[in-house]
Image: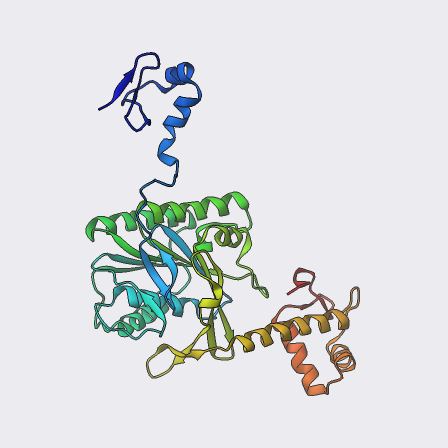
Length: 371
């Protein structure tokens, strides 16, 4: 039962809320009712203690902690060849598997129950894409691709068409399979021309976010780090950090990749183990190889910090050094022998703490002045 307020030409319900009939002229109503009309118009956006909200549907959990839910985006970042695509393949395998699959201990992926799982690759050549896909199928114990697993290589298309192609395929899959369980975007930064341009970057992240909300799905976005740093690429990466439900980082040491939690909205980083994995030649895909001790991670960080301090001393601006001069200076400042000094130089170069100029001399990299 609703009571008409004849003075304001609106309808007040018993609970005190105001219902505005369909077809109401909001411009006229705003003039007559002012603030109340505005508050009523946008009341569907308001959250109160009594707002009926369904709990988030979990898609990915690690060690029992929520990593990814429907309606949200999650970021996986790392340097080139660090194992980002390999890790996303584990998530896809878990999502499409109809039973047991060769996953990692502690990582739980909710089964798709017949809903679509989509994968878009903007980086790999078609033959490499297919090789990775076959690894996913073997991991999930499939001999051929199930109909609900849709993997697309869109590298040959123009950047301007990426969004339309992605949206249309998700839309069609949602209709055909009565929903979309998971979407993996391998190469999210390739959807725009300039990852450092704020408007393009913000708009793209909003696009992915709206797709996740519209189709009630979890979207995983894979992105590279800025060279020599632990920061996701450009302004696009910064916006992903702000908007993602979780940001997971893949790091490598030798042949071993390690999954590290970076930013978590629904879990504590201390609750997520540092999962290690490496390529298995017999299985032809990456396999679990244990948990990395936290103390070892702290030790690695300390070593990198010490390496940067050494570089800052050896190549103190405006000083530039030839290779042999650099090795001698490293020996002097570190009290190490020549072999160790050469290793330190290689590490400085690998972390891009130093760069080589046109004069062939080495100098401190101004873009990497801090860890």
